[in-house]
Figure (cartoon, rainbow, N blue to C red):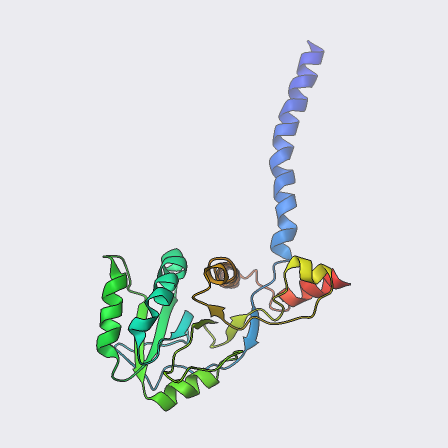
Length: 238
């Protein structure tokens, strides 16, 4: 009888301690969380741009994926569909998330045609096109950090992450684990190529999840702004 009681107590004790041990195991990962890097500060807002509905579209206060479609937006249908299916559809339920594409004045009709191709009766309330003068588009782009320039038609295949404080987000160190282990040279990631499905599906999706986690932790008061992803990578190199 005593043996049965002891065995039962051991089983109950084990069942009680396992969840506690699991939570303790998870705690360090939350405590050591590193936010998405700020790669550039003080991006311009959209004060000089207008939307199709004359609704005021702002970057400030929103988490924005920002792109530039140029004078011929219909030429970028594949890129736009990639953003719709791999980014917008995945994150449209998050608070204050939006997609904004910048185009020159005069391309409103082509933008409407492009939007009709991607609507599919789905919720696109947080997907916007804004229009402005060519020099204002160039100035907006120049305020971003990028490895390439706008094309002559004011378009690019690169899209950017802008946070609620107009900071451009990305990776100060975009090396993979193999490159870190071999102590390869550090290189940044300022933008994401929307033709490259791997870049969008893996890197950008991961980075947006990290950014949303950061803002969720800020709301809870659990966020430590002194931690950065690069610190973690530097520690791996020591």
